[in-house]
Image: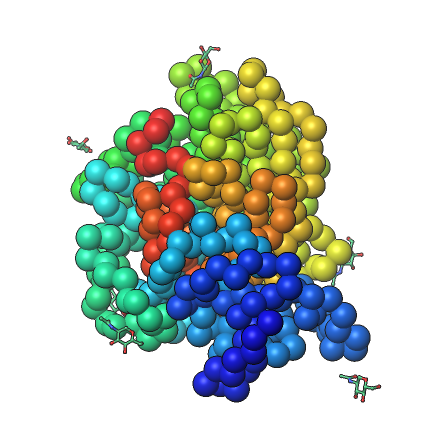
Amino acid sequence: MRLVTCLSGALLLTGVAGQSSRTVPPLAQVIDQKRFNTLGNRSAITDGNSQFIPPGYTAESLFAKPFHIYDDEFYDIIGPNPTLTLLNSTGTNPRFHEAPVWYPATDEVFFSQNAGAKAAGTGLTRSAVIQKISLAEVTPNITAQRTATPGQVRVEYVLPNPNIINPNGGTNYRNRILFVGEGQGPNTPPAIYLMHPYSPYNTSILLDNFFGRQFNSINDITINPRSGEIYFTDTTYGYVQDFRPPPGLPKQVYRFNESTGAVAVVADGFNMPNGIAFSPNGQHLYVTDTGLIQGYFGFNTSFPSTIYRYDVQADGTLENRKTFAFVSPGVPDGIHFDTRGNLYAGCGDGVQVYNPSGKLIGKIHVGGTAANFQFAGKGRMVILAETELYYATLAAEGAFPGTLY
Ligand SMILES: *[C@@H]1O[C@H](CO)[C@@H](O)[C@H](O)[C@H]1NC(C)=O
Ligand SMILES: *[C@@H]1O[C@H](CO)[C@@H](O)[C@H](O)[C@H]1NC(C)=O
Ligand SMILES: *[C@@H]1O[C@H](CO)[C@@H](O)[C@H](O)[C@H]1NC(C)=O
Ligand SMILES: *[C@@H]1O[C@H](CO)[C@@H](O)[C@H](O)[C@H]1NC(C)=O
Ligand SMILES: *[C@@H]1O[C@H](CO)[C@@H](O)[C@H](O)[C@H]1NC(C)=O
Ligand SMILES: *[C@@H]1O[C@H](CO)[C@@H](O)[C@H](O)[C@H]1NC(C)=O
C-alpha cells in the first residue's frame, strides 16, 4: 500500500488491500471502506442527508477526483479516462432536477426544473419548466472543471403545446417523449403527456385519472421492454410540497396500456414510490422509495432510502419484492441501467452505481443531490444536480437507447 499526499494535504490511497493494482484514472480515486468501518463517536450524521466525509478525506479531495472506486468492477464502467464537466450553474434556482430524456435523432437532452422548490418560484403560482441542451455543443473538459464557462452550452426553454404542468419524470416512447406531470392545485390533475420532441412541441394527454379519481402527483415513468406497456409511480410530493391537495389514492405503482386504455395497480406498500426502471432484459422492475425526504415536513430517518426489485411476469404483473439496496446519503431518486445490468441511482452525493447483487461499486461524486441523470448513448451521461448541470464521459453505455420503443 502506497500513500501519497495530494495538494490539499489529504492522504489518498493508491493501493488498497483486496483490490487490484489497476491504474487509477486521473480523475478517479480508490475509496478504502475499511478505513471507516469503525468510527466511534465520529459517526454523527443524524439527518440521513448530510455528506459523509470519511476520515483522511476532505470535501475538496472527494471533489477533486470525482470518480470514486469502491470495487474493482468500477474500472470497466469508467474506463481509463473518465471526465466530469460542469456545464451550467444557476446559484439558487434548481433548474436541473428531473425527467432527463436523451433524444438521439437531434442529440438533445430534455429535463425539468424542480416543481416544488420555493427557490425555483414554483408551487401553486407557477409550473416547473421543461428545458433542453444540445450535446453537439458540449466538449468535455479533461480536468474536473468545477467552474462553468458561461455560454459553453445553451440551456433552452421548451414550451410544450399545450403546456405540461409540473413535469417530473420522462422517457422515450415511440420516437416521442412521455412526460409525467405532478399536477397543480385541485384543478390540474397529474397526468401522462406525450410530447413531440420538435418545435412547436405538440403535446397530448394520455391519462389523468384512475376511474375518476385524480392521481396524487405522478413522479416517474418507464416502459416494459418486453411488452411495451407503460409503468409509473404515483406519490405525494405535490402534497408535502404544498402544491397538491391531500392524497386521494394510496401511493402505488401503475401499469398502463395505451392501446386499450387499461390501467391497473401493480404494487403498493410504499412510503414514497419514486424512481422506476426495468433491467436490460426486462425480467426485473426496480422501484425506489424516497420516504426519507418528506418535502416541507423535513427528513424522517426511520423511512426508506431504498431500492426494491420485483420479478416481472410475462403478463406484466410483479412478484417477489426484494430489498435490493439502501443508499446514503439522501435517497435513490432517478434510476437507470447500463447494458451490463449495473444500476445507477441519483443520490444525495451524486450518482451511485450498484452491481446486480446490490453492492455499491462506485460513485460519480458531485458533493450534493443529483436527483436524476441520463445516459446519452455510449460513454456519455448528463447529471442533474439541482443548481448544477454536469456532463460525464465514461466507458459504460445506457441500457435503453432512446428509440427502443
Ligand atoms: C470523542 O471521544 C473522545 C475521547 O473520549 C473525546 O475526546 C472527543 O471530544 C469526542 N468527540 C466528540 C465529537 O464527542
Ligand atoms: C478545463 O478546466 C480547467 C480547470 O477548471 C480550466 O482551467 C480550463 O480552462 C478548462 N478548459 C476548457 C477547454 O474549458
Ligand atoms: C447557463 O445557461 C444560461 C442559458 O443558456 C446562460 O444564460 C448562462 O450564462 C449560463 N450560466 C453559466 C454559468 O454557464
Ligand atoms: C401541431 O399542432 C398544430 C395545431 O395545434 C398543427 O397545426 C401542426 O400541424 C402540429 N404540428 C406537428 C408537427 O404535429
Ligand atoms: C395492450 O393490451 C393488448 C390487449 O390485451 C395487448 O394485445 C397488447 O400487447 C398490450 N400492449 C401494448 C403495448 O399495447
Ligand atoms: C418519523 O416517522 C415516524 C413514524 O411515522 C414518526 O413516529 C416520527 O415522529 C417521524 N419523525 C419525524 C422527525 O417527523
